[in-house]
Image (cartoon, rainbow, N blue to C red; front, side):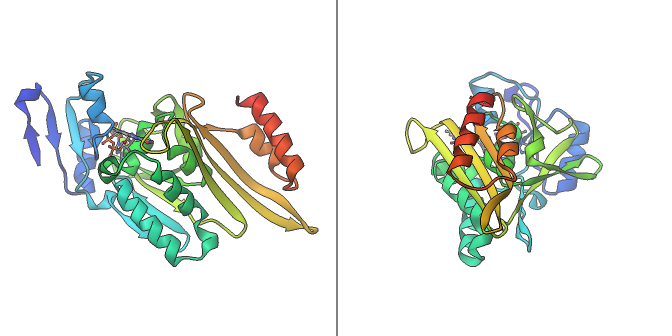
Length: 274
Ligand code: FAD
């Protein structure tokens, strides 16, 4: 579909039906804005008076709406709506081994406090990620859960980047002008690997966060002690981007999981993050 909306100056609106058409449009208009729910772009255009010349609605592109349960995790197309994601996560939690779904449970809990139903019914996974808001509710969790982002360029070349490395600065991500986010891969958790979400806001319902976090720890039993073999601690709302507490992560890895470790970790956090 192509609409020339003359009432909006020279605004061009496209609604391609295949990924190949999206890539061709991106080649022709590298600065075009992709749209799914328009819950970010709509605010930019109406309230912040930002003007975009070309808008590409990707709601009807099947390749960007994939939701596929794989042996090692969940593949989520970038145009998948948050309500659809929530439904699949709930199903997966019922059907799969509990050990594998700690990340899924954390996303389900975080999505409960994400906007209202109307927004979740239209807003997309990719729209939230690519906006790279420092107060995104989901980006700290993608990072903590070890998610991987698949990125495709205009020529169809695909590269994969860890969510942890994707956010570069204030609303700045690792995407060139000719690239788009294709999909997100959320791995299942391993045995003794736990993921947890946190969100603190003025109200519980439908409110923007004051601070949030995503955390993951993988424990291994050695000489009858539980040792931290891997971890991730990511905060939202404390800096210009979702922020990994790297020093704290380094401090806890290799140590015994006990009260003393918690005290030490809190001291490092206080010095380096807060
Ligand atoms: P759009 O506005 O359609 O697009 C956003 C941006 O992403 C555009 O710049 C677009 O070009 C880019 N983009 C989209 N898809 C791709 C892709 N595949 N590749 C590259 N770039 C892409 N956010 C929270 O985190 N927590 C909340 O509680 C919350 N509450 C909200 C409440 C309200 C009332 C509103 C209006 C917004 C709220 N938001 C919240 C923000 C917003 O809803 C989310 O960020 C949403 O997920 C954005 O998705 P969208 O599809 O609407 O994005």
